[in-house]
Length: 157
Image (cartoon, rainbow, N blue to C red; front, side):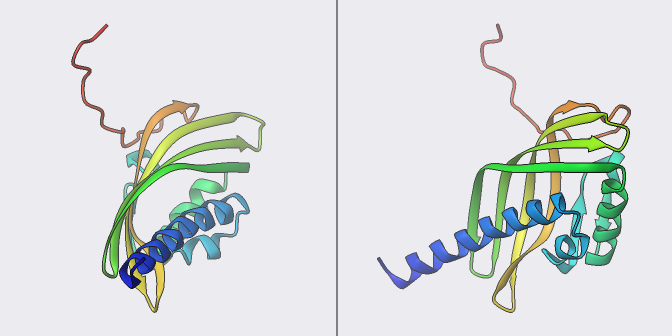
């Protein structure tokens, strides 16, 4: 195995850990630690009904704080992911299943994917861009989303 191979593996593992840390800290409602997973100049879009385009770590933290304030608890589970690394930047997608319980007991479920850009800052991978696309929504009545684009089946049933 070459040094480049080892670096690629290390980078991929560090980005996967970043995704896991984001979800873990979000479920713990540790908003400062969630914000710390983003670059200072990061951009995000969790959907038009969840704040639309947001720029900057502090603004992203505030948007997440507003969105999370209605939940007693949440659970975010990362599934399959793809990551393409190019030096100190990378792009990727990660499938995520999320469960939310509001303070009134109402439960909601989303199947989504994070479409991300990453940047290495001071030898640490951080999220520099995040768009959330949704494929399944149970609950969140009246909320507009970025829908996960899918090609039409070649032979519809």
